[in-house]
Image 1: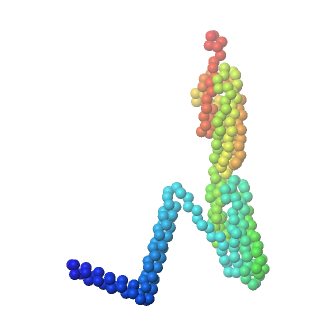
Image 2 (image 1 turned 60 degrees about the vertical axis):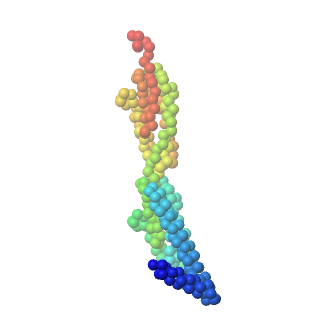
Image 3 (image 1 turned 120 degrees about the vertical axis):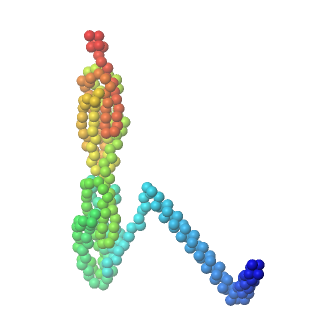
Amino acid sequence: MSGVTTACFRKMDSVMEFFTSGTLGASLLGVAIGLVAFGLIVAVMNLAKRGKAKEAKNPGEEVEEIPITSVRLGSLVITDFTISPFDAKEGEMVNISYKVTNTGKNRTLHTSELRINGVEIGKLSMDLAPEATELADFAVSESVAGEYKVEVEGLEGKFVIRPANLIVSSIDIDPRRVKEKEQVNVMAEVTNTGGITGTEQILVKIRDKVLFFEELSVAPGASQKVNLTLTDLEPGTHEIRIGDFRDTFAVEMLLDEIES
């Protein structure tokens, strides 16, 4: 065993002596060291890319896809593809535009087709002179919440309409304790931060008996104030409910009725 080990060390010594002696050996040694260093750099870069990819695949983390910014169709080049706004509201116009440039030497007739969620929405014809650029522009609107995929000239994008999201501010009840037959003023504000019109139920009840009921409709991006005046209230604790927001006030019985 020791003889084999000694032979191996002698062979390694001879190899090192070859590389370190003479111009050719030194050059080969430099090339070998450079290749090793390059390999290490590539390995480190690959590990870094894998680390980023692994981080991007964490559950719940949204990964932004890199969009294709230009497409060539023969002598035509499609660029500057835009969709605005990305976050739209019901009935709001969404502008879809891009530039078409004729890089050829001949006049070209071209028809663009717009598709949303796989369905053809419209077409646009262009007559392009050599080296001419024209702006293609579509305007669409939707009224249902959801994500809309846009396809045109091999380019893809999207816009969204978010569902209704009604937020109720704190309810102001004045006064919170009244005598029977006195009135109570209720004030609140409901804001819709979503993309479509939403409704909320305004409910006033006592001991599961509904005293007042109304549906409040709020447009996207708008706020609506609630002003109620409640009269002829029965004694007891009343609950006011607007959506999931609840609050209470109390009505006391008149003393003369108690005495009688």
